[in-house]
Length: 463
Image (tube, rainbow, N blue to C red; front, side, top):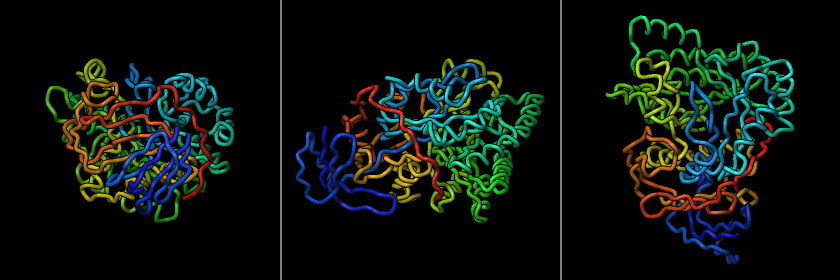
């Protein structure tokens, strides 16, 4: 299969230019003016952008959590991703008690086998840090192709500070990257107990139980451990102005603290929890939505480079039957998470680029090029000869209203219902094969389930 994309504006992380792109098989093989390569498909992309496919490095597909499991499995989740212009995902792989890291990886690979519509990789999450597991970190980095490791500072499966230090030391030696969910568990537990005593158990109090200081303290403490070990860390789903200030403070002192944020923390605020009839439960996620002041600070953090990546934390639970299964009378029992894998690119273009909050080049960097570099996806993330032909022909003028019925995520709501979008994927290619296409009203999946493959990633290289 070959495709020739003529006359589009190729966007990189540092600029843009008009050229033709030719892909033969899986890879981009030529970029230039007036290419005459014979092709199975020729596209006139004049007036359109040619973007590298977005990479979502923070998803939870088929994840068991809080008495249920995420709605999207590897098939529905990667179909939805493709329809949004996401051509690779790095999914979290929660180690179960007694498992080795390899066993955890092989378990999730078995769930993905024959189902993935786009390429994927895995981040092992270390939740049972036995000595032999800590020793296995070297193999995970150098042999398994999974050089990034998730740890939690909150929840029952959190690790203690001593374990974090050991993991930071191991990853420093071999080129790994520790990712941390940074919230102070003791503050959260204390506030949960106080709110329960006062009978304050509606969805709004989920946000009250996890104020900005909870994230701020945990980010600061994690940064100190990085400083002590000389290692590096990546803060997932950074949500608050205060948390960002601690990231910036560490980076200004030369400490390798990297961070991502998500569209929900850029575009939604804590007033959503006050929606009537339990609707606020749709936004119960951890960390919670913050103030508009934090929204604005995070946009500034993207522009300044203190935030390097935008991901989704896609972890969908139906509003009816999952969010309300146990949590009607207690916010602590509402499954934490929200859908977002399909709306990532369209939101960042429409709400970020079109509204002047970030440049088009910054969008490409934080969704594709920088993400590929951060996570060792050496064949992904750029429209460049030799890279995988993960390409989005993007019409910057297409209009679309986000509504659950026109999306493909296997969930009964979207937190971005009603957002008026300017700019949509027109055609999406994953390793040179068309996987999604605009039909005049929405994007349809036209790819092949099972064609996606597991990608081994390279060890971390310092920015």
